[in-house]
Amino acid sequence: MQFREENLSPTLAAIIEMGREDGIERGLEQGLEQVREQGKLLEKKETAKQLLKLSMPIEQIVIVTALSIDEVETLKKELDI
Image 1 (tube, rainbow, N blue to C red):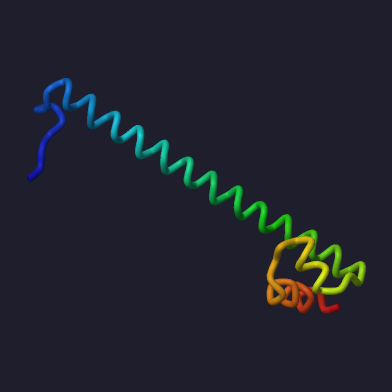
Image 2 (cartoon, rainbow, N blue to C red):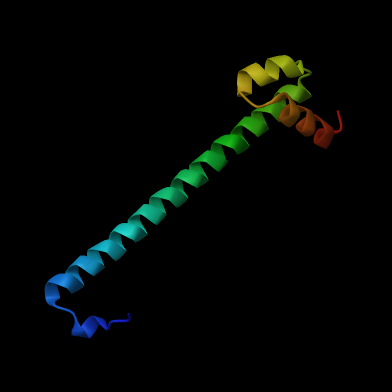
């Protein structure tokens, strides 16, 4: 069933608008959280790359960065070290 906003009571229209605003706010918060997590991961990878360049053992890099062994080994291959 479709409805037109101009046919709604002011109270119902306000409730719908509040729902929209809440949905937009939640979407923005989720998006920001995803960006923060991606930023943290990039920072860990950059740290791992620097430690690889300093010849730190992979096992220690895993401990320092909390990256997996596979992730660190992939970074090492990318650096061609």
